[in-house]
Length: 171
Length: 171
DNA sequence: CTTGAGTCTATAGCCGGCTAGAGGGTTTAG
DNA sequence: CTAAACCCTCTAGCCGGCTATAGACTCAAG
Image (cartoon, rainbow over all chains, first blue to last red; front, side, top):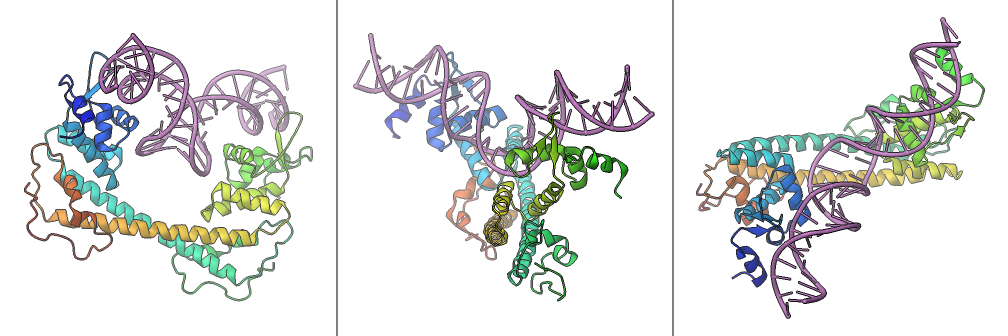
């Protein structure tokens, strides 16, 4: 016995669940559900009143979508998974392939960000030991002197900075 | 002696540089320059023809914007830096503060992504040792069994997975 | 004088995953 | 019966940093 409201909506005329019932049971907003339908992730039958009526299995399908999102899958990915499923095939192999791709993308992004962070730390540490006084026409010598090759080429080697002595950070 | 075309545009009536000249000298598109102007990052005087005429210093200012972008600063950040500069203050301290914030945000993102990646790897490795056969009504048991607490709580401890034996991945 | 290159404004679109609102019709609880 | 709660479609907006049109004007070279 769920709650009263849900019950009446579920039974009603035996056609199916209205969109609000799906929303309540899944925690996904009505707007999002309509959006999923435009993407073909879920589907419904329409009553004479124009209302969407969903088969009870759609609750599960929406939960599946939510779950897949927590794994970082895009709605497009999820659409492909569901397409495989609806062809009658088992999408697990495909899901594993997608997951492996996600992991690799993540790895690449992490590397990129780590390297970038090292570059920024490099700048920060270098700047921390420098006095600044913009030359006429300069905005911020910190940024404007970045073209110096030793600074721009560092790339994740932040242990031993730059500072070869005689650079004219003359500001 | 730059090239001929640029020369004529630069001199002209002595009013300033037209937008195309700025674009050529900085490598920033005309559209982007107009966009910067709507954000207040650069400014121009208008001729009687309605054209923008830029002071030569604007070339430098646009290069500054580009350079600051390579450090990960948003155009909004850059606008604030330029505001400080145009007040007559030296923005270096402010820039250092912003940079430090960027580094910390980056660090937080990297940690988050690393942890997330570990979770995904955990799933992947667990799934690699499992046979899949969806139960009736299931779409992909890989995804649908994620609610099991040992799997969802892993968090960056990917060395010793889960698999306590008797789980009914009965599919 | 003509033609092509440059400039102007204003608007729409992109990426993803929605949310919010207007302006209607329908259903349901009391 | 009535009012609230629900449902519908269509449109616009968000985030950032632009790009890409359309339609009109101006300028420079031959």
